[in-house]
Image 1 (cartoon, rainbow, N blue to C red):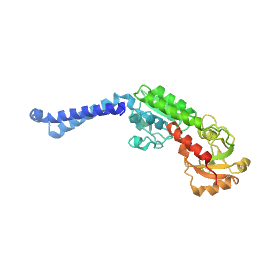
Image 2: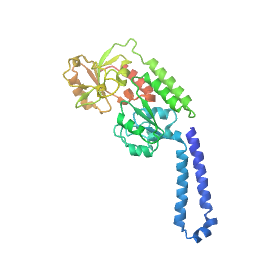
Image 3: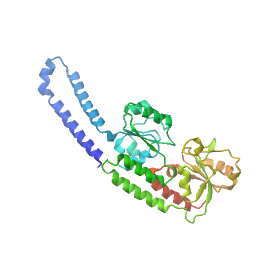
Image 4: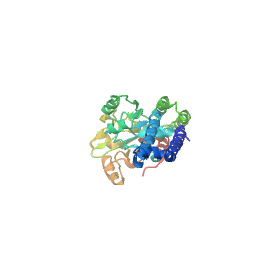
Length: 322
């Protein structure tokens, strides 16, 4: 049981006992209270209001409980570090792990955050990502009175997961259990990274598609491209997208001369959900390539999900086309 659960249990016990004492003592004070003209409904309302006030005081006095998640896999690393009960907000794209996030309030999408709702939830930290969240949203949060601390993440390759865990440890390492969980996650990541290297694998030209109408791929300086590079799969087009912006996900027109040299077309399951119905279109785009569906979550979601993601990548590497 985490320290949050321990505190929650004891606080709950205290509130139950206080409530029982309050209601149990009602009969002792019934005569003077009712004699003063206060009926039972008003008296009960005041008791409930008193209990609710105590609950809110307890929550606001525990700032470590109030984290806001607004992007993809920051919430994964937060939960993996034992801080799941500290989450007070998430965007609609924060869906894993489902059990830990089911009751966490949603505050819109990554690009259209409901700032008023997020502010009411009073997080002490808001975790954001350069690719997923808008700069103007972050600026608006920073302008709040008593603004929460903004934690900016921007992993650009699987190796950056180690820095991400270290970053979370720097912010939340004072919480019980977090250092041990961070160390375990770091060891798991190091093992999978060491096991997933190009080695003697022959290089392949691949087109990784994330969208259609128009077709959209990934630049070579994105997390996905560098992930694929660990098994010697080189993404096309041969472009860099920069630190942020639309250039990181270039449009493919369909008339580029390099398309005939592509050896594999990878149709991602997200953000566009490609299905088998799109395989023929992919083959027409790259007539000499083998087209397959791939799990976009496992290839693009970082944090703790990079551990199974790297294993999945090795499975793709050994799977025979056809």
